[in-house]
Length: 198
Image (cartoon, rainbow, N blue to C red):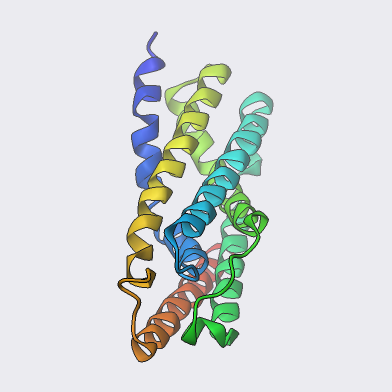
């Protein structure tokens, strides 16, 4: 019964995990392009589902094979490259500065989540195995943790999207400044991740 205690807190820890800087930067480039909350929440949901899918799949491989060598800094570097790409693509997209874009395919948000799950999966699994050595309980923890991160990201999306709603839409200059700033942060943080993990 002891593994139940950390599993009960896994969702709470997962919700906090959703607010890590690389997650927020990646999702902000997706959700702030929508003028309605529904499509923005959809992108946040698919990011979370992709993140959880990779955590569970990749985590299960490590847990059942004990292949701890799969925990690699190169996965973090891949997230950095993705953040750089997201930031640059947003800077180059003229529509970002004037009007909100058409919703992207949900598969794109899901793919971004998959990459994040791959990067964080190894470290999470090693931490979980230290507390929960039983494989089935460890996988259960990761699943609940992932679902918690979905809830956390939905909360983050709701907050991030407020300035871009119909009622509170930013003026053109302020919107352009917001796009440039968030894109620059995405590129800068992505560059730091690549530099720190390669």
